[in-house]
Amino acid sequence: GFKCGIVGLPNVGKSTLFNALTRAGIDAENFPFCTIEPNAGIVPIPDPRQDRIAAIVKPQKTVATTMEFVDIAGLVAGASKGEGLGNQFLANIRETDAIAHVVRCFEDENVIHVANKIDPASDIEIINTELALADLESCEKQLQKVVRIAKSGDKEAVAMKALLENKLLPQLNEAKPVRALALDDNEQALVKTLFLLTVKPTMYIANVDEDGFEDNPHLDVVRGIAAEESASVVVICNKLESEIIELDDDERAEFLADLGMEEPGLNRVIRAGYDLLNLHTYFTAGVKEVRAWTVKVGSTAPQAAGVIHTDFEKGFIRAEVIAYDDFIEYGGEQGAKDAGRWRLEGKDYVVQDGDVIHFRFNV
Ligand code: GDP
Image (cartoon, rainbow, N blue to C red):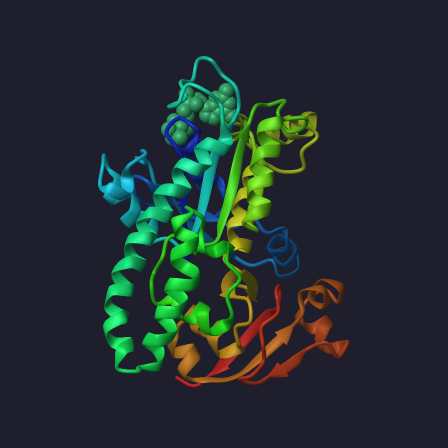
């Protein structure tokens, strides 16, 4: 599964967000919410397409695809030097696939800010500096290693040395994230081997007041910083979300309607995390179960089959595929077949978002 780590300074609203996310897990119909560790939760990906498929197929149950969110608390300035829980914090981030960086954009004199003022630019810089310092250390170690090997003319070591000296180290010395660098395919492949923190896809979660969605200078600051790093921004009021999640279904619908919202803001956070990882969804639709599955964008049919079971990938023969729009328009599998919209695809087929697939395989 894929993992998104929630980071940020103390008292910015990380736990409030995490609790709302995991509560959303409990409420999702037919999904057995499970907590792996106290600070980790499996969250179903909200996808209205699945409900529309289920309305046609009328299965015994529906199962959403999921993503793991982890609340990574404990960052203080100096973490990269091992202060506080710093080392553990960095180790936890290293295990994630993406980072959700919560930034305080709400004013509340009852909630102490670690630096005594609401200053998103400074907050972001503190965290990003710690991450960059940790990467700087990794890169300096790597440089010492490759300098020796590069002397013997080893091509890869020469390329790594150049990349470190010309791009990575200068960037990190300015406390800037490696993900903001323009790198070619070769360089990206080399960077992958370094397991850096600042290459991880990142979104900023701007935690605003109830009335802070517009004309909010703090928010403008976050948007500006994100744009420079080509990171995304999700604007949310975590306090409101934690209230929404406590309501039962009817109350919630009414409450959201009053606010002029179509769905809880949490759904935007979950989907943004999914998009950040370059993931998309395909469906299996049988009478027993309609189920959503996650694949990396660009996955082939056998790779997609492998998400269900490794044997499906090994024994892959063909995929019976109906595009989501066709499945809905023609009222399911039989209708799609009658309309000539049912396809038999081979091992090179690249799975499209929303495809409804039945795999044929040898066991
Ligand atoms: P963490 O330390 O980053 O995990 O922060 P918490 O989630 O524990 O939140 C710290 C405090 O800020 C708590 O008292 C929350 O109730 C409060 N808080 C969180 N989000 C909001 C918000 O959007 N608005 C306001 N006014 N308070 C918030």
